[in-house]
Image 1 (cartoon, one colour):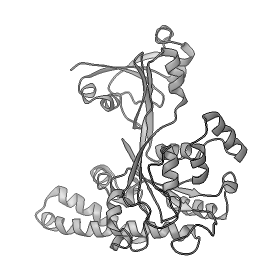
Image 2 (cartoon, rainbow, N blue to C red):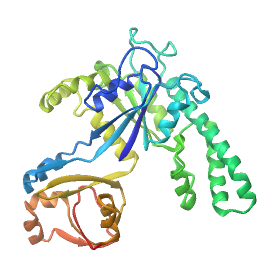
Image 3 (cartoon, rainbow, N blue to C red):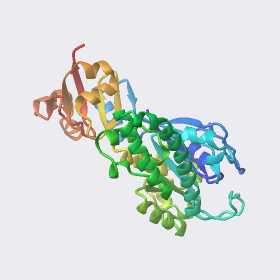
Length: 365
């Protein structure tokens, strides 16, 4: 399952946002640093209106959306890479996620303590990024030391790993997150992806604003946008307090409330969409009487790979994929009509799954 870590300085709204994300009170939220001690984990369904429509059409017994796992990681402070605050205990948690949501305080409130005593979103961002970069550099140095002997012995894999880690170490001197696709290709890119370094993970900056600034943003948000544009990151403007209030409302009430605030969707929905975009993910669907279910794959995945997400045997014994585009299926009204109209196709091993494809896999084990 896709794992996304929520990080930031203490008292920026991380746990409040996490509670809203998971529609629960599983994470503490209080006005003092280091409120979160152990990482809280919550699974959040990915909103997809197509599933209910398909369920009504095929009269399925249940709907199973795809999901994202959110990890609320304790507030980091300057010096975390050297053990300050709660230190390396939480840096290890960040290494295990696929993407990072960095919550940035973009609101003034004299009643909410700021760990550094002033509101400065860019300083906050750079404090976090510097600590993550320093921690990665320390990790890389240790790994390079272990590789040295193997490199001298001519081990090809060790040489490859040494080259990649050395280059990343040089880039980290700028204390910024790195888009590895800009610097590596082939086997080097594959190794970089598996390195678990924090600096290569996609980043979303969640600019946490007050209710009055949700629709229009503010000067703090503009600073974050400018910074993100220079570093290949995305920005989502949210109000953690508003998201927490939406939890207790019905979908209809929540929609009306957001409309009154001048926005059309919740920050949570926009954040999930941003995660999918940053990680280059797409969704295909299986639909039958038992269930309608969404599945997540990397964009560009071929049919056998998608089949493997359901079960490894499906990929091993893949024969064909029966594919109908979502819009074509809805227009046809049923599987029978879709086949009669010729919009259902049999695709082979080279077919690339498209977002919204309704797929039935044929396989032999």
